[in-house]
Length: 127
Image 1 (cartoon, one colour):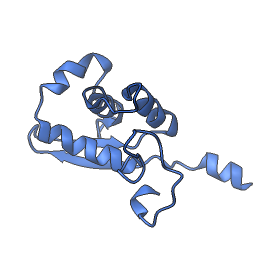
Image 2 (cartoon, one colour):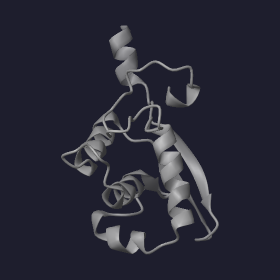
Image 3 (cartoon, rainbow, N blue to C red):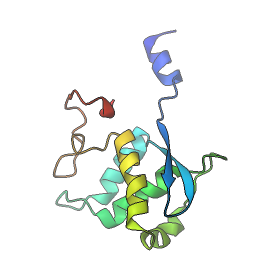
Image 4 (cartoon, helix red, strand yellow):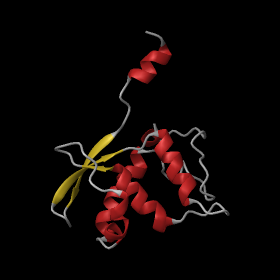
């Protein structure tokens, strides 16, 4: 099997079970695909490159939160306003994990909101 074939055959989606004590549940947080990550970065940046966090936070939560028992996505686009009314601490738990396992740490995204993931670091959390 060629290197290319091995890369495309591997399941490289990262997953982590996160306890949300405010809701009394565990959720599965999945890392974003490259396409989903760049879509969120593109749709949440304004013309000056500043990130619109009011848009970004629910997009990340909707796209990355799954039921650990069924594997189904928990939220949908219509849940955006409802989510923003929930505990900020609970939302932060999901967003922090989703961003970490999706390579959207401060090292991966510069101040203008543009992707800087091509910069090599020794931080293993971005691999």
